[in-house]
Each structure stands twice: as C-alpha cells, then as structure tokens.
Length: 88
Image 1 (tube, one colour):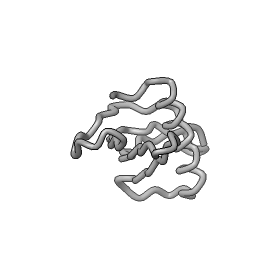
Image 2 (tube, one colour):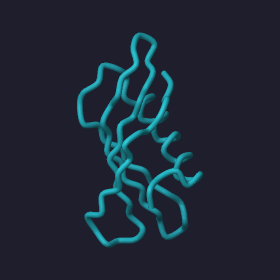
Image 3 (spheres, rainbow, N blue to C red):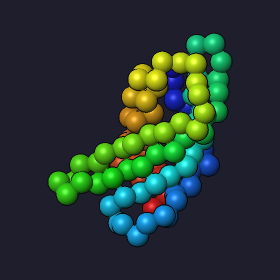
Image 4 (cartoon, rainbow, N blue to C red):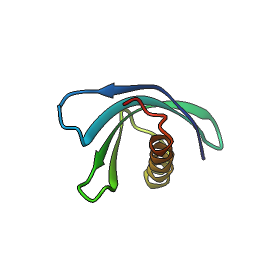
C-alpha cells in the first residue's frame, strides 16, 4: 500500500478555535490490486505542549485492513502539515 496524493483539500471552519483545524480531502491510495480515491475527513489539534493529535475518518467502507491504512495516512498528513502543504 502506498499513499499517492491528497487532493481537493478543503478546510472546514466550523469553530473559531485556533488550535483545531478540520479538513476534507480525497486520498489517492495504491493497493496491490487497484488504485482508489477515498474521501476522508481529518482533524488536526495542537495541544498546549505543542504536539499535534490527528483524528481520521473515512466516508465509506473499505476492504483493506484499517490500522495500516490509518497509520500510513496519518504519517502522510502530518508530513504535509509540517511542510506547509495544507491550507491555513
């Protein structure tokens, strides 16, 4: 499994809390059998100590083990955030 890209990243501003950012995106994922585009929602919360917590939700069911997929997507999103690739 490989995360190819995050596209159509949109920030959802439901709250005025500056340490909580909510996003919608399309994750393009390469599985051994096929490539899929998976709609996802994720939230990045910055704690008082400066660390970030990421919560990830899928918009549909998938037929692949969830834990490895969540781990890979979490790493990819955190890297994109640290490189400044996510909308502010």
